[in-house]
Length: 83
Image (cartoon, rainbow, N blue to C red; front, side):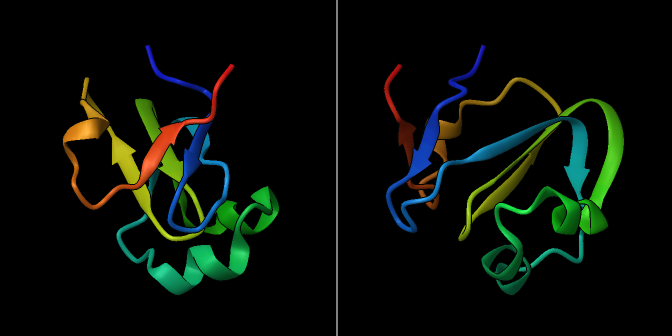
């Protein structure tokens, strides 16, 4: 299970999540800074992968392929946006 209301405290953007996708290796900070939250632009660097999930805000992104505790990643500033 994961929170579907994640928010980034660094860029103050809602964290988007995409089931069955990972981010292309060529993704970088400027790509997300310039294209969030426009899905049609983000699709350019999304790779289909069953069972994975791609997460991104305007300043950080992650591709998750197995159960992972995102709270252990010290670089992420994602918190629950409350329900």
